[in-house]
Amino acid sequence: MSKVKELKQEFSCRYVAQILIEATTPLKVGSGDSDIAIDSPVLKNWNGYPMIQGTSMAGVLRDALDDRLDLLFGRKMGSRVLVSHVHLVDNDNTIPYALGKSSEFLEHYKDLPIREHVAITHKGVAKSTGKFDEEVVYTGSRFKFELEFLADKDSNDDKQYWFDILTELGSPLFRLGGGSTKGFGQIKVIECLEKTYTIGEDYHEKPSNLNTTKGTPKALGNKKKAIMYKMSLQPENFFMFGAGFGDDEVDDIAVMEDVVEWNNHVGKFEEQHILFPASSLKGALSHRVAYHYNSIQGKYADRENIPDYVGTNNDAVATIFGAEKGHEKYEKGKKGKALFSDMFKKFDASEIKIFDHVKIDRFTGGTVDGALYNEKVITQKDTWQIEILLANNLEDDVKEAFERTLDDLAKGWLPLGGMVNRGHGVFISPEYEANNIDKRGWICESLGGEDE
Image (cartoon, rainbow, N blue to C red; front, top):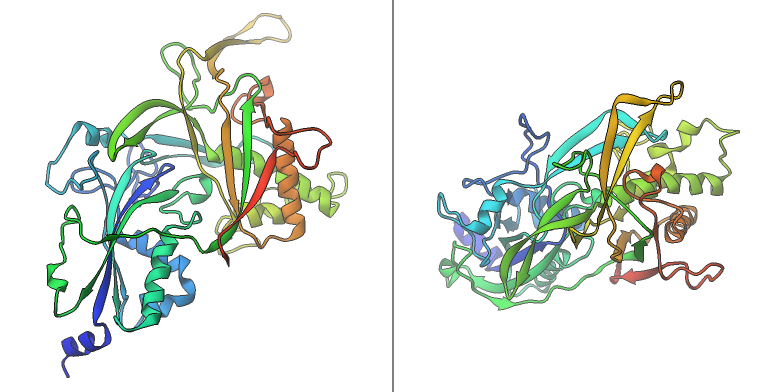
């Protein structure tokens, strides 16, 4: 029997899904290279627009479906799951295939946002060689790709496998690309068109161009179980998440990014949105979690060597936020169990305040040369909706340390952003009431139906 007949006999059909996704936070899919301006640029296609390789999407699915790795992705016979490249779409949800294809909407992607990062030590200062920047794709960007699954049409097991593959894409735990623990890579499925083709009958009719849509709309559910912590936060006065540079008026400004908004499936860039970066929230929570966990464990500064119990040396911090490769305790690294998301609010240019600063010489009482500077802070009183996804299998002490940290945040005891030593960045939950256990300022909900 020929290999073709063997294949036809074993896999009589192909389940196919054309999927349109939207990035609800910025996406970071690196090219693996660096250039003179950026430490980590985004991967781009033949027209210079962001793209995601099919191997990246397949890798995320492989990780999520690890218990069925051999059955779905194979070793000896190859993968039964085929993933196309994930292509950016224009503002009409079509892929710009043609070489040189451009539009006013697509031209925005020639100048992507750049995120500045700096690693902080337990002393609150920058870690040596810990400063870097990376390029990200705009929030709201949409991408289209195709999934295929080689199956036996009469196999109930194969139908379940296909259902499980698609369900992964609908999970709130699903993240695409790098930096998922820093708030990047959250997506939502806008449309999933599903169709079954029979090999030897109508499979040759399957379009190779993803702008030619075929299939029946399918709603995707969620089976993964997790804990969702929700909290509303309002700034007490001023705040600023620094951009790392100034403008023509001041030396330091708040970071802003454009976002893509969709109305009736037509995309439009909306400029100047205030960014509340998940990395800032994560960093502040991480330090406070270490404090509370040490307190619960009876580890105090007057008895212990503090560097042994802070940062990723702290078991609660390593469990919740992860640890880097090469760590003394976690040589292969440790994946965190919390997922954060960047947040955006439309900026009102009238809601700002400029502070001028000058450093004073303690001996002469005069100003220090070159030490005059100023900053532009935000005065908008928007309510920010914080959502943090946490695995449901944490140890009691770790979970308690995390929830005590949320208590501090709700009370305004944990300032966020830059210039906090000057009184900026105090956020308070409007739902918090002192001495009321039922109004701690945050709520906790269970999601999904299976243990993660």
